[in-house]
Image (spheres, rainbow, N blue to C red):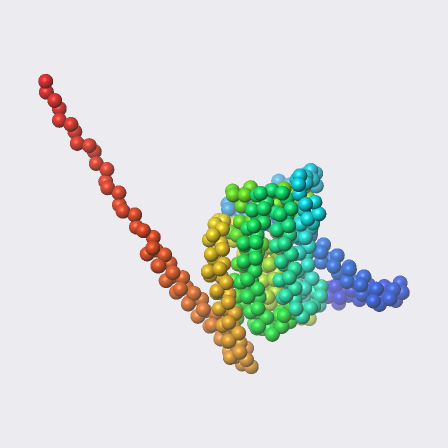
Length: 405
């Protein structure tokens, strides 16, 4: 039993230890178990960052025809630990004129906002922090704390480049939250539930088969929310030196660094939960530890796509980034939400196969219409571009007639 569901076995053992052996009241014992669970989940999030940094360095290096970390330890596994030791020895600098409280609170808030999301993500059928019936709203609410932390860091640093990074945060992250929230409603409609466990249990088949456009928009908008390439305008070193965290050093900078990697992994976990069935898989209901394996496999598969995008695409301009959101992604997300609601209403009570084919067909039709609109728009843009006149061919000057004396 302990091999199948070790978390439940350990939780039952600790509950009996607290209540029966130590005589602790049941309410206090439940509180202690909750605190232990919080510490375990938070420790998992903070420790996995060490592996994620090494993994992304190796994957990015292979994509870009490099070797990556290969000196510190076998396969460079100790490189991240060396970086941690270096960051611990860095001088902690606070700029003159900074708002001390907000300046020091911002990096902590950036990590906490990501860790709070893991409270509602189910690892297996019995492995989850808490099961609330508005988990999707909770994800949106705590995710906005990360945006707030970046604004706090840029505003409190008393630095113009940091402030410009904060302004870009308002322009970018807040904008991309709109299509993100719109497509978050698609799995909610399909599952008729706003709880994460309810959404996972309703995925027969996976929602990526019913709403592939929603999964794609969610992943793109999530990458923009993290501020990763090609959406890393918050810290464009070629324009604003380092962006919102330019005045941070040592472990304060490390907290922002860790929050970015953990946030990228978290959006991969959310994509796996909302669209790839979460922990669902063969025998996952009977053997919960298998559910953890399936969930982590789907999460790392999605995370590989995130790393692939970061290592391949160049940074886009800020005006292109905002135009892409307001003129393309947001209208498409809104249209997809309306189409999903209409199709779900029409096929209510139908067989699962009919429901799947109907939603998939609606997504394909919407994708074809979108492609046609983009082609028409591209033709109009090309017509407006003036065609340069050909330059006249260079000709040698005519030889001057020779003069005779």
